[in-house]
Length: 365
Image 1 (tube, helix red, strand yellow):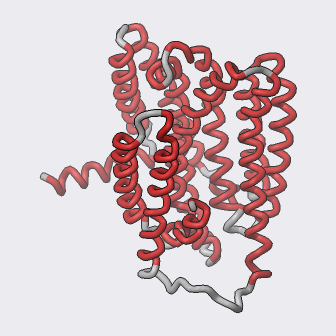
Image 2 (cartoon, rainbow, N blue to C red):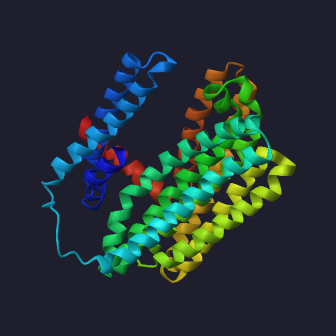
Image 3 (spheres, helix red, strand yellow):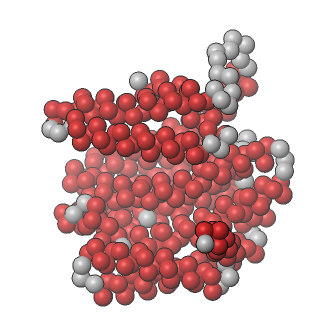
């Protein structure tokens, strides 16, 4: 049912028209319903069918609304004379890339289970879930920019495209780096809060795999914001397949020696590889942005800010024994110190954000 209604849901229409307010409101409403129904109807192991039904309802309900609401954008109907040949090749290439990514991402856990045991899979599973949560939050920022970049590149408006791409890379640079450093510094506390003392062996695995967040986000920028809009899907597929094979081989080499830490390390290497290869495949397009002074300034100011985060987290670790207090103060003070450092270094993106905050405050008072 989810497969059928995902097709009917036409989520991509709202991405094209950048109607994110509708998607946000709809998602929040259905997730609230989902949580309420789970608490009411799922109370014991035998209620797994209720769990499945509720999960499907959350997906089906939102997709039915999508289909109805999409008619305000366009006329949705079956067409007899569709130009399949024009669309089929790029669709299949992108589909193959998605399949390759899914297979090599899933293979980590499978190979770990084959070479080690369920205990190793459980420990690695905690670090992967935390990694995926952090990556999901950061990559959500990128989703908003993809349709605009695709439109500008498709219309050959290269100057505007470079400006938007520069803004995306700059913004993610000053967000992804501190988020990754913060997660590395607080990895033990995060594991304790989310999983408990029994899963503390996953801390080192989490610290290793967190580096993959930086590489995967920028690999995604190069693939979805540059390669696909530039109709270089073939190069993306090639890079994904090479990375997937490398990742599998590295798992077989590293897991026998360092277990779940080896799985994390292979993920980091794979994400770094695909970032470099995707960047090289679109270097002629991104070169002016990557080699710009603003980009170097963003990286330098963000790196200095990250040093401030490390200092703050170390001081908080020495100052508070309480796990919750240590976590709360580490996050709050890290954000404040990082923001202050960026402003003192006159980081352009941080200064623009500060101006917007001032304008909002003035309008309210």
